[in-house]
Image (cartoon, rainbow, N blue to C red; front, side):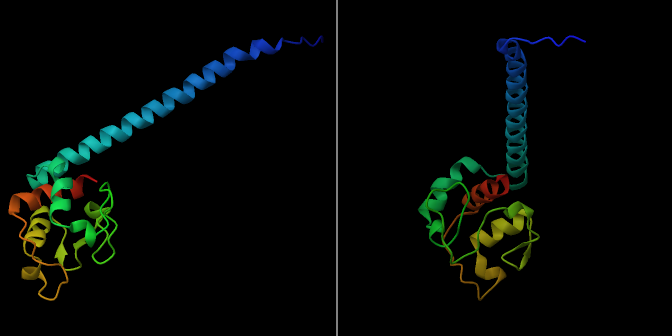
Amino acid sequence: MERVSLPHNSLRPAFVIAACVVSLTAALALTDIYRQRSERQAVAVAMTKGDPARAPAIFRRYGCAGCHTIPGIEGADGKVGGDLSGLRERVYIAGVLNNSADNLVGWIVAPQAHSPKTAMPATGISEQEARDLAAYLYAR
């Protein structure tokens, strides 16, 4: 059997096809990530009746970043209070309340009402502001 030698350029179409497949796979993965993020945000808004877009300013206004690590908030790397990353996946809030939107809002507004010895101060955050914060945290 005679062996046929192909010119180097004949491999180019295979590389182009492979690159297109990789690009398409990456685009589909990104689309899925954005869809999941959008779905999480819609669920968080429905659960809390809050607006996650208002949360970053509220976190800064009340100094939450001084005590907490908060995902997506620049400079929010406090170590006094709990890390708020992945809050939606937890069973308890502050180790004392079942994790629900109403309990989280209640905790943010009046933590001492739920745990008198907590180090978290009463900040004066309104219920609507707490709903906005809860929506942000559950959407992450």
